[in-house]
Every structure is written in structure tokens, then in C-alpha cells.
Image (tube, rainbow, N blue to C red):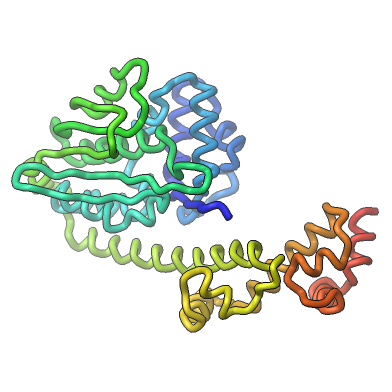
Length: 338
């Protein structure tokens, strides 16, 4: 099973505007990568790492700009980072803003982790990309975009000349490094062991005129609520994916499945109840969806399908399917192919 991750919607809006600005159809390119902004009206929408990585590869191919991530970063604003953006903007200092971004990094993109460390003079903001079965969950263009977006937001908040001390990137050295030097306004190194930005600690601790502790705290509460709900929803998605993986081997009991996703039975039941569902409901939903796909789109026999769905006997599958669809599997297959 592929490890996946997701990112908040804001990056896609910035990408669309950025591509339009250089003569490409941003919405069309996003749609080709599976991201249809015209269908997504909620700020809580998230897109998978599969979609985002495919988008960056298409954008790189279409524009022939190796700095495309940096270009997209020019179009970010507080909304880009969901409620975290507003918490950052209301922070008393840039130091507080970066701390908030690290605290709530799961909301922004759970395909990477952010850390923030300090010594007597400097602060280091680091981005570590997680690995999936088919490679890094965030592409090098995605890393360019995110780190340049961080610097852009901090610069906007500062309202005065601002620049990091230096930037280090794991990405391959570009043919021309001028766009990176311009975007970060400091020395940039490539082919490094990690991705990080070093800031002057004194500059980060300057009090900002836009700081509003009460507003920042209220936004922090909204972010925490969103993350809690997202994690609950993610439990359901994790369970669905694990059931698809395990059902052909006949493993459909809650105790065994819970163990494979690192939870005890009671914890899994509690998390599912908070999402207004149960193990049995998720199992039946997955089975019903896959059963319809198999019957409509494959030549697998009814017996074979029943075992792929984890039923011990074909008769059990027949009874369950008739309860779901008011038809037998054979009748459903026949009518779906007329």
C-alpha cells in the first residue's frame, strides 16, 4: 500500500494565479493533475501528494522553468496557509509566526515535518521530506515553493527590508541560480544534506506592529480543531486502505485490523465513533464499493469476488450484496452491462 500525504488547498490557488501570470492556463494544468478548483468551494479541501507531485512535473514540463516553485511562491498570502496564515499574521514577532507554522505543520502538509531551533545568534527553520514507497512525498519544486513562500510571508509581515542569513536545499543545483538568490535574497547552497533557512535571531524577535495576541490565540484554536477533525478523518481513510489490503487474505476482524494500523481495538472504535461511523460500517462500505467495481469492470467470478472481499463463503457475499443493492451480484452484473 502506498504511503500518501496531503496538503491544504491554498497552494493550488497560488499555483493557478502564478501560471496565468506567465501565459499558461493554471486551472487547466491543475485539472490535468486531478485538482479541479471549480469543484472545491471549501477551504478545508486537501489534495494528495500524488496530485501535487504530478502537478509540479506537468508545470515543469509545460513552462520549462526550473524555478517554477519559486514563481508560485510569489502569489501566496495568509489565506494560502489556511487558519495558520492568519495566526502567523497576528503573531507578535516573526519568531512566534515560525513557531506557529512548526506547531501546526500537519495541517499545512503532512508529507513533511518542520523544525525550528535556535542558538545565541541564529534560528534555523528546517523542512524534512517524508518518503513513500515511490519516493519523496514532496518534490523539489514543492520544497522550493514552500520555503520561498515562508520567506515571502515573513517579508510581507516585516514591512521593511528583510532577508535570511542563508538557505540550504537538497535539490539538484539548477543551471542558473539567479532566481533562487533573488527569491531568498541571500546566499543559497544546493545538493545539501537537508533543507533549511537560517535567520538572524534579533531580527526575528522584533515586535511587529500588526501583532494581535488575542486574534492569534483564537485562530490557534480554529487550527487545533481542524487538525483534530482531519486526524479523525484520516483514521477512517487509513482503515479503508488497510481493509482493501487485508481482505483478500480473509483478515476482516476488528482486533486484527486495529493491530496492523498501530491502534488497540478500543482506541480504533473511539476514533471511528468520533467520526460518526463504526468498523462494521466502514467494512461494509468498502466491500460494497469494491464489489460494484469488480462486477461492473472485471470478469472475475462471483466466488472469486467473494473471497477477495474477505467473505468466508460465496453465499455470505450474496446475502450481503442483496442487502446493499436489493439485487443479487449476478443480476447487478447483468444489468450493469446491458
